[in-house]
Image (cartoon, rainbow, N blue to C red; front, side, top):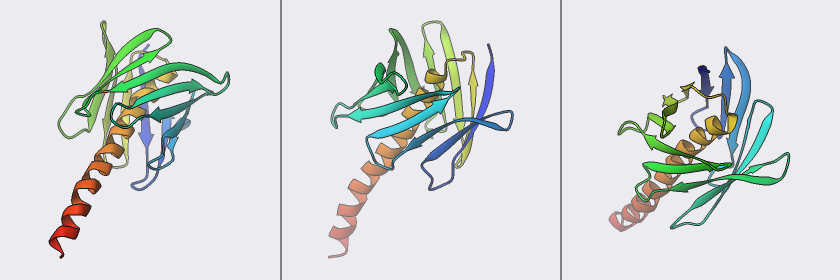
Length: 164
């Protein structure tokens, strides 16, 4: 089943709105630089809760059942991730150097392709699994936030050293 969705996000917003044919059908909302994020799509809601710093992992919890249904593990270079949901494992990766295209796939091929601009993007999927769609968007958001943290951690100490 081919599904085409779009998403929109304000430049400084922490809310991704997911649309199908111009109608909002879901969202992904994080608390800036927090360890939790809530995603909703197709009348299902999930909590993404990240723990750990050097080797972080994200638990995915179905909020209706208060049950862990999956886990996301990340690679050190912030370019790939492994998503396991209900005994199904899929891979996440950036498809270009700029981080504006990424995909999730399994051994059968690409399941979902994502593209982005500054305030929105496209999701093209050959699966209707809401959790796969949300997880792919979540991982990209997580990596973007970690990139900002790293940049700030490098620039702030350098700027205080230079200004002395």
